[in-house]
Amino acid sequence: MKKLAIAGLGMILSAGFAGGVLAADQPAQKSVTGTLEDSYCYGSMGAKGASHKKCAIECVKKGIPVSLVDSDGNIYVLLPPKNDEALPDEVYSKMEDKVTVTGKEYSKGGVNFLTAESVK
Image (cartoon, rainbow, N blue to C red; front, side, top):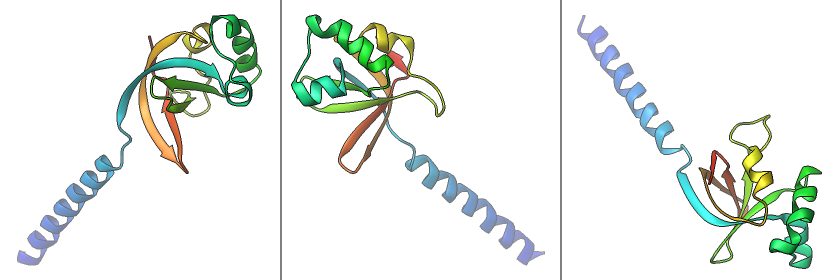
């Protein structure tokens, strides 16, 4: 009986520890304020601003990645809220506008990513 109790306690502690590790590995929720840019024109030509809005909308509709550029020049590649989804419509309609995007932040290989869960 004592062995069964010890084994049960061990399983409970292991499950609790694993849950804590998984929670620590979850990406942080972050809000970033910046300007939505199409990464091709912004990255290759420095094109931005109100005069570039129509081009930026057309570029992202054709599949060019959307970048959020904050006031310090940090660039976040926007991802949809979930896999196998498109970016929210608010992203396309607000290209070249200053917005605040809230979502989960990821960094891989020196590249910053942010899921577009809220765009205001």
